Amino acid sequence: MMNVVLSERNVYEDFELESDVLYFKLGTQGLVSFHGRNYNIKKRMTAEQITQLTSERSFYPVSSNCYINIGKIKMIEGGSIFFDSEITDSKQLPVNRRKQFVIQQLFSQRATSKDLRITQ
Image (tube, rainbow, N blue to C red; front, side, top):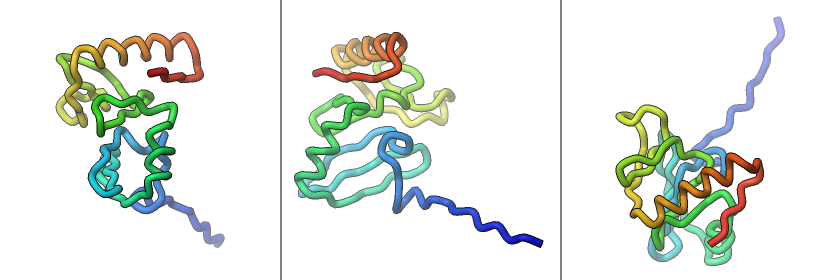
């Protein structure tokens, strides 16, 4: 009999920003709160790490301290962004009309181009 060891990734310790994180919020004193599908993780980061994080191309700022992963949005409806197809179970964030319009344009841009480019 052959033993096979499966290497499973611990999402809480080793998550991939673009594929695992739905959105993140910047807190005080370098505390960043990452929100995934089934988890929330808070990490303390340096100013350089935060600058690099906020300059990620796949994240768009919806407020001064909240950045959403454009690739993980499933729908925008009624002033809210939904990150799952089931509205009742979905994580959601409120968004103002101006940001909602910009995000909808990013969706259409993403549909025409595989490479997501976010310009501010």
